[in-house]
Image (cartoon, rainbow, N blue to C red; front, side):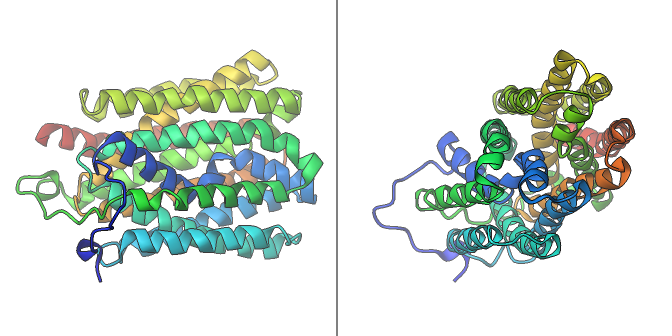
Length: 391
């Protein structure tokens, strides 16, 4: 049975498939597949504080989790057209909960790396499936904006409480929070519809934009995500290196995430009124300034401003980049590919950051992140302009 031939669910609440409520639920379910990304700095520091891992080992655990997600998202590209998405998502979420609970029992870096890679495979597959569903909506950019609202809002809660709970409860609190999130996501599935695949629309961008431009858009997603996560994963360590207290750092990161959600709210409100080129290039230019401010993290107000600016811009730009890729294929495969490249970037950022850091070399990390964002802007410019011309 394919996703397009699923029978109607008797007694299920009817949600408008293109409405805000359905979009918010899809965003929540997609977030469940990669929520660890939104609490990455808490995860990395928690493994160091709770299990005694080195910065390198903790960063690799986090990176392998996301590399697994990238592989899972890539696998989803080839099967999104044939799977009943709700039933598939339910099974994947159950398996993710099981891996999170098993992770509580693991205290060896190499074994935990393997377990989290497996968790990432499941989560990435889930995100790829949900991204393909989002691409079938009338306004996928808006739902991708909602995705960032959920990620930054709930990620802020995680960053506020989890670093302080690890010394009291141990690293297990990190994995318990991930399991609880997945359980909540599974409870939302019965409220959503089938979202059958759409046939290609005559004259749509997929017919006029080359695969070369799609490749450039996917590269932009990879570079932008990698540059952002390369700094974000080590935000707690960066603040500590500049003499800030853990309490001040946690509060700052939480507030920055909540304020950062304003960027994705703006995407939901504005949509494509300004096209895609201007928002993408303006946003990346703004984040260059915010990233540079990290070099004065010895001042709490500057550290806070750097986190707030980069969070707002991250939440503002990435929905446009994901929507840019989705426009190439209304059936959802390009959106699933964007999920793969997004996760490859999110995984490569902490991995490269760990190599660059040599435990304490944060200025080098900041400068490389700025270079990555410049390259992302250059890659996104041509496909964004082309889509603006034909839309």
